[in-house]
Every structure is written in structure tokens, then in C-alpha cells.
Length: 187
Length: 187
DNA sequence: GTGATTATTTATCATTTGTTAAAGGAATTC
DNA sequence: GAATTCCTTTAACAAATGATAAATAATCAC
Image 1 (cartoon, each protein chain N blue to C red):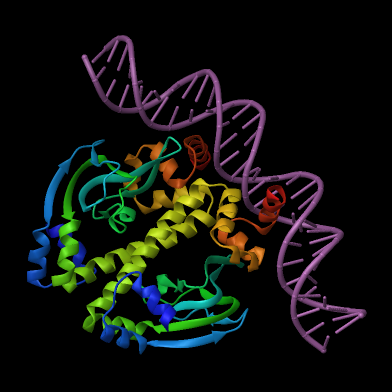
Image 2: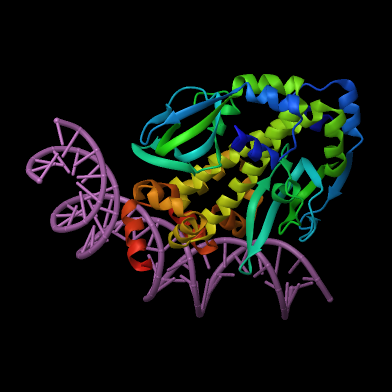
């Protein structure tokens, strides 16, 4: 679990008993490429941390598969819209590269908020940071061309090379044909 | 301040002494159309609640004025990316219709988080909700045409009629000329 | 009110992205 | 390893949006 607590450490230094309480909510999951980590239709009650591998959140819009986001080594991934509203999620989490994951039981986590204000604060800070990232992503979508967004994604992480282009296209908000065209001109 | 505490009530029932502590951070502001509520370049240390009026957050991108969001009666407005990171904001808040505002001192608010866990929780819930709204907005931007987004905005609130079209255009991520064209076909 | 400024629309042409269809490659199954 | 399926590219045309310029319309300052 050291990777996870190193991650937490970047947001907030936790006391030992807080860490202990947190560790009890965590379990290790090993999952293979193309498997489903979380299916459609259930309320999200787990927050995941990727020790290794790649995952994506996706949903169907008018019958087509849309990737909402990717997660890589050292990232947190959760279907926030369900986690925070308690409503069933219309999204699923799929594994794109064999992954070692730590699953955090969110139901129990939220209960700990009452007894461990540090834990409530930790996750407040984590999600505040994610919120800021999301605001910045809107700017990227609205004011950059598809080509710029593709090049920017490539720049952020080389792991992207391992992701099927159709998922990258839907993540960028364009068709796969359009992405293919962009790749041809960029080369 | 009743409007503000009614708003808080929708997220969390606060105890009387918590309310009292919160009330001490709040001050009333009356501000006129076209005035600047918060300028560029300073770190955001205030969260605003609109009792009446309209406001927008905007910034300059390659020399053009871009509206990030609007706020109407009963909304909270803050430059979150600065509030949460402590970095100077590249954004400003402008008043679009004469407004009655409650200003919440965020510096003092964050200090109260230690003594009043209820307050930390209240604002956690408020911003979690805003985060979910932002995630949904991304979907709107990526998978709806400019025309659909414009009609959707009109549907959400009639107050939009009072906002200059150039601000609506940049909010929608299109040029004003393009918005004008859309309005012509929609009529 | 009048003139000046600002906001909005219209028109034209260029560019980007979408749609559909077809073909070539890569990976998987039996 | 042959067949099948899935992934990616290419091509041709359609639709949406951008850029620029000019014409109206609305608003503001005096």
C-alpha cells in the first residue's frame, strides 16, 4: 500500500492511526486487460488507485462508446457523478492494460469522515484538485483544435501509445476517421 | 443573509453556533452592471453568493474575451482554480446586471474548517456538486452541436436574455458570428 | 436628441470535422 | 496457419464553424 500512502502524502500528512483506519478499507485487486472493473448501472461505491496498468471510464451515447477519461499508474479513478450523488452510474470502468489496483471502499470511507476529520479533509483536497483539472480540461476542449488536443495528449504521457485509437478519438470528442486524418498530417 | 443560509440548508443542516460563525465571515456587497467584482491577477480569497443580479467569470485567451461561466440569483460564484491552488487568478469576475451579493471571506473560512468540521463538510458538499456539474458540462460541449448547446442554455434560464450575445458565444465556445447564424436558423 | 460607440446580423469564402463506404493491417480463435 | 474479427487508414462528399468585411441596430455620453 506504500504507493497509495505516498500519493495521499502529497495532499496531507496523515497521522498513524488515520493511516491504519484507511488501510482497513483498502484491498488489492489484480485485473487483466479488457476486463470490466465496474459495470454499468450500479451506484459507485469504490474509489480505485492504480499501482500499475491503464483504465478508462466510458459510457454509451446514442449507441457509441465514449471514453470519459483515462487513468494511468499513480492515478485515482472513480465515477464521481455517481459517488457524489448516490445515483446509479451510467458509466463503466474497463481495464486497458493489466493492472494492479487498490480498491477503497467508499461507503466505509464516508462513514469514517465523522470520526477522522483528517480523512474527510484528505479526500476533499483530492477531489478539489480533480475539480480544477476538469475546469482546465474544458478550456482545452473549447479553445483548441482536435489536432492540438491530440498532440497535447501525446505530450502528457507516452503510455497513450498503448491505447486503441478509437478510445482516444472519443476522449478527444472527434470521430476515429477524423483522428486518423490528423495523425496522417502530423506525422 | 437568509437566502444564503437557505442555500446552505440544501446541502447540510447547520447548528446555530456554526451558522453564527459563518455569518461573521459574510458581508453584503451592492454592485452595478458592468463593474468588476474581482480583478485579474490576484489570488482568489472570496466566495460570492448572488442574492440578485448576474455575474460572469471571464479571461483573455489570445487577446479575446472568453466567458468561463455565468452566475444568477441563488448561485455561488468563485474562481475555483485560484481558490484551491492559492495561485493568482488569470480570471476576473464582472457584473452583468446590478447585483446584491454576499461575500464570504475564504481565508477566514478555511481557518474555520479546523474548529467547525460542519463548515468543512458544507463546502466539501457544495464543491462536490459543482464538480459534478462541470463533468456534465464537458459532455455537453463534446457531444452537442453549438445549436443544441445554445437552445439548452436558453431552456435553463430566461435570464440569459439579458446577457450580451458575445458573452454567450464565447461561453458556448463559438464565435459571435456563428451564434448569430444559429439564432437566425432557430427563429 | 445627436453623435459616437458598441452590439448584432448578414454575406462570402476557407477550414475543420462528420458521414459513409471501402480497403488494408493486426490480432485472435479454432 | 486459415479464417474471422477487430482496428486503422484512405477517399469523396456533406455539414458545421471560422475569418473577414460590411451593413444595421441598439445603447451610451454629452
